[in-house]
Image 1 (cartoon, each protein chain N blue to C red):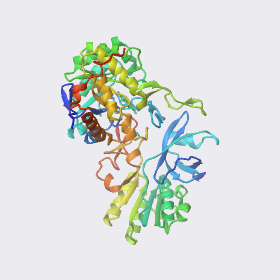
Image 2: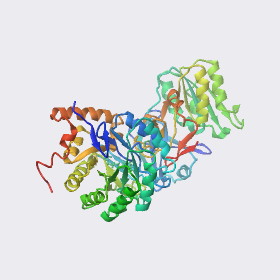
Image 3: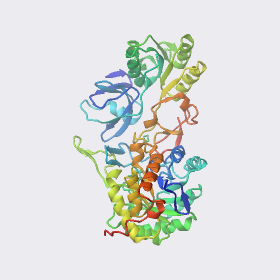
Image 4: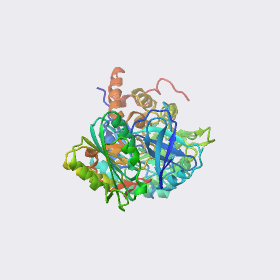
Length: 247
Length: 308
Ligand SMILES: Cc1cc2nc3c(=O)[nH]c(=O)nc-3n(C[C@H](O)[C@H](O)[C@H](O)COP(=O)(O)O)c2cc1C
Ligand code: FES
């Protein structure tokens, strides 16, 4: 299903149970195998892919009926206990927040969402979030819809307007860092879904090392209090060789 | 409590359970983490002259109980950038062994010298990666080349040198003998066993590289046989590797001739907590067996029987 001009959701039947926050490794035979957060964790499950690298582009142009491999799910899940949750998604980051927000809403939590994108057509899952949220606000870099500017401005305002028990965020690390500093001022704990290069997804090969953690097994969801002491957070990642490179 | 300390390559290790190369060893923080989790020593990812991205994914295939297949393709940040990672591990006091791989004796020697300069306490030469052409296993299959590489490295460095041997050879002990004759200070064995997985629906190998290397419980009997045979033919210490997960696995390797062991796949299966858990389990098991010092029983199975 096409979500935005650059984003497509693939749904598939895959039995192993999964929870919101977890990811699977999707194998495109003859091409590559990529980590993808589940954007749907029930049945059928789903991943929402944004055309970024070569493989994700090629994946989006695969003919219907192409066989792909799936392993997982891997990683931890969002803690669904907080009663009042602010979900802040940047770009395709909303993909992992949506199933978590749905699950929390179903258990009676109240959701407020702030969703950002470069431009209106790239906003992801706005209707899906509206269906389960008390309020959804959007921001676009070009002002084509909602707040003209960053979603971080919106989330800062929302944090000032009402109390929250937790902030969930996924998106570019610089964005998440700003979300964290705004939430810190109000002493609201933040949980970030992190992305790093993945190879084994088993906590073994070290490809996804982030400070003392492995994103594949210790994450992908981390409390911000664990991330902010890490010098790499928001600054560098590792390439396939393990070299530190700027984000 | 049985004494788990073990002395080899000029160092007394607090326990015989080392982190194997290629597991958690690409970043300094992970080496530090493994040390702080209780590993007796930590071996770095195998480092080459240049940064290497490794093979595309899929790079691993897992089997529920008996292990996994991998063809990472020796990804590593290269010797230029790697010293900062060793610095992080050493600042935590870790006993770090630096692993290197090269295409020929000259490259091995140059890399070894640069790795030695980082302050690692010993080197491990990866003469055994089963899935990287010309790097490691090609050389490691030929006793003459093993001898040449070890000799060149010994000339280039003052610190102890461990030769890591492949199991993918009909006479594994001959490779160890070649390394010993060139001055190696210890042998580690084994690296992964050449293996393959095929997807029946797609009719193609699962790993992007095709062939890979098997690790985990499935290879323990193979590793044991290699250590056994090597012990019969060399006098330098042996570090046993392959499928170690429980106390009895360690004890079997020690009885076959190992003075220390390394853990790889078990870290993925049981988490990094395996180091402290296994040290405790091992100590208790030795107590039950009335063994006071682990070192007492090195090679202990050779006196009672001698399988060829
Ligand atoms: C993902 C992975 C990466 C590895 N990378 C290296 C490496 O860079 N250098 C090396 O000498 N051995 C490497 N090995 C081999 C291990 O060090 C070890 O010899 C092997 O896995 C057998 O031990 P195990 O059964 O405890 O895993 C690697 C193994 C795995 C599973
Ligand atoms: S992807 Fe290999 S350790 Fe996380």
